[in-house]
Image (cartoon, rainbow, N blue to C red; front, side, top):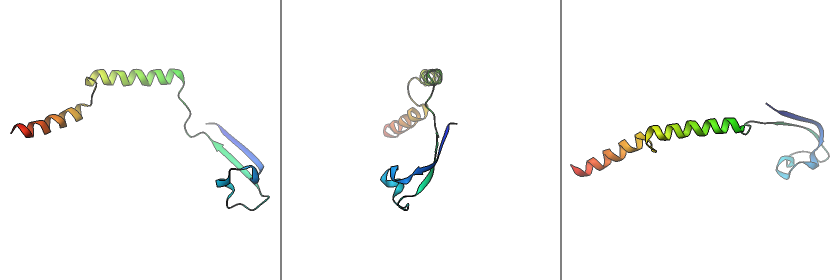
Length: 78
């Protein structure tokens, strides 16, 4: 993953919430890491195709949800 490290960064240039407990005039080390990168075009298209295949397989809805609704409906018929 990508990582950016800045040593001796002036604390006064940080946002208020990050510098709240730091001494005035302090230099800090900032490390920024990407936790989740955006999907590439190919990854997004692949995920979309997988989703579409799942929707077509289930008829556009969750089989568990349909079974539960049918179960509730059948309770009223008894």
